[in-house]
Amino acid sequence: MIACATLQLSGCNGRKAEPASTNQQAVLQGQLPYNPLAWRVITSSINKSAATTSTLYGNDAAVSYARSNDGSDYLAGSVLALVTWAERDDPHWFGAKIPGTPRSVEFVSFGGNGAAPAYSVYRGTPLAITASDDAAQRSEFITHQRAAVMP
View 1 (tube, rainbow, N blue to C red):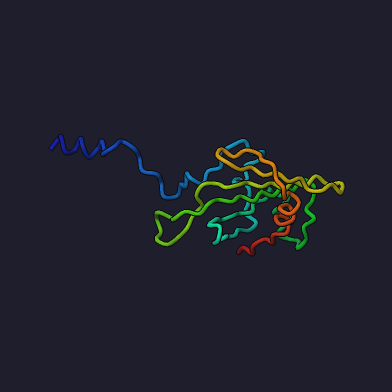
View 2: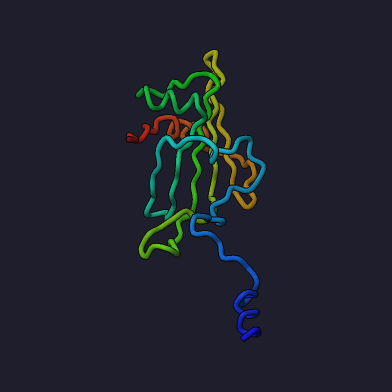
């Protein structure tokens, strides 16, 4: 009886199960200038053909502007971050998809005084800044995303 109790208390491998709410694969690792996951969500999208999911985050200035304006002329100090993950099957919900490994993090920063927004993209594992051949197009795509209507 004591042997059974000892085995039950020690468990099979001594590791604690990962909480259902933790998705360690989706964690952003690397030298990013900001932590977009600490910001608020502006909108999200899914690209079925690429099997990716993206979320557009913004700092407080960007979120305030996005939720009250239809334009793309963000105020100085606004920063947007489009985070794109590969999709993976949700182990807790049959048929559902959740973010997997990060594919990219794109930042668009607004400095003011009529300056063009600054664009940067981070890719790889860990995420590192990379060159972009289509910075102007990506910046325009990101800044023209409309805020999702939230209750």
